[in-house]
Length: 318
Image (cartoon, one colour):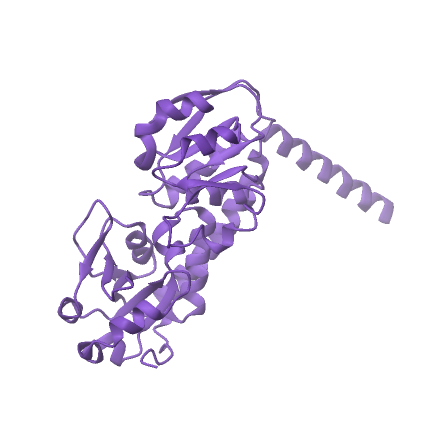
């Protein structure tokens, strides 16, 4: 009897394995990739990838692909997000994501360059002289755009079999966060980072964080859009917006800029501050990186900090 059950299980496993392999056949090269930003021919499976955007780097990480080079933050703003550092351990920084060092890229002898269309479309022809270049739209994109990019990268790197599990995990985390958020009343939120001079830089309506907040039953109080996705706010302006909650995004984990802001006597009158509704999160995650792994970190952090349930935050005046 046990032998029969074992045979049934073995046959079932074999059938599912065949179906799975048929669904995700190995990528055939040369491969033609067409995006709204152009068509690129990739002659063989890439082995030396330079990736110039954190969101695309994020998705390569999920697919188990390690680049040889990567785009960085501006000097003084940290190198790359902490969660991406392990995958970039043996890679080389090639300058800022929107103005990379072309000579540094060429020295790495890449066989593929990945970048953000909104940042470097003006460099497309120069990059293509170094290696085939694929530019994707992610920095302004929602989760659907990130999933689309993941699928394109999986096709390019012959890792399509990993995609279903990645999307399933992401959807599970997202659903959990949304379910928690729906249990509490809708809140207005001001989200942004503080400069070393103590100026609050609010994320605008066209920032990706705004759509994420909306999914989590939160409304960004800033309705303006800006090309840079940020706008300066004085403490007086913050008092006028009067948000239910404030999310302060820390650069490299430093509280120093926030302490300078909170030293303003008017900060004591900010309602979110008085009601212990000021939460601290990572600027790299909420304002710079836009991949699927980033979204998972966002949702998990929104849960763990008590932000979604409006749990009183630690005393931020200390």
